[in-house]
Image (tube, rainbow, N blue to C red):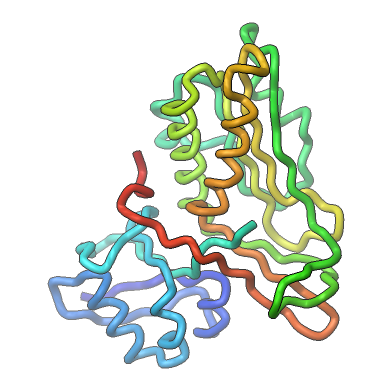
Amino acid sequence: MELEVRLFASLKDRAGGERVTVCVEEPVTVRSLTDVLASDYPALAPALGTSLVAVNRDFAFPDTVIEPGDEVALFPPVSGGAESDGAARGHMPYPTYFDVTADELDVQAVTAHLSEPEVGAVVFFQGAVRGETDREGLPNRTLYLEYEAYEEMARQKMAQIAREIWQQWPLVRGVAIVQRVGKLEIGDTTTFVACAAGHRDQGAFEAARYGIDRLKEIVPIWKKEVGADQSVWVEGDYRPTEGDRGV
């Protein structure tokens, strides 16, 4: 079977392109695919042990079977740091707004999507680019960040986070999640998560905290720290499990 594999972040840099093509003997599993990738593309081999695989925009595992026509993507663990399509919006009990965009964030415009007569409180987390990073292996002073996302899967995972929030905090009346991509300067907004409720004590604070923490675990987004003398892709260490597949 001939398969085209989409690559993101540091894997894209290693391979020198956004896609690679391989021929794999059937039946094809994620394990057999990565074995062939290591052989056909030696530059990818050192990273395959920690890389994640998605099939049809959801996490896949070594024994996951890959069928002809499946969309396959390979990427590093998520960095520690448009409205949804119809499929993602289908089972949402309350208003939602999910976006992956290069545009500046308009907080009022985003939270307006969550406005309902019953809503009396909106709690949000807003992340920004900082100029200094005290982490080993990264530039001491950041000039700017470059964000990249597997956008189609990112929106689906944002919708999954909203569904998880409603499972835990059923009084939350709306969820908005926005991730910016592209080149972001010091002070620019990077990420925005908002939860609406009737009152402040109906889970909105807890749900917003859960939303940003979960985004940094399962939403396929990566950032490159660009300094004066080096540029480094930031990769997380969270390993998805079967429980992280769409609910």
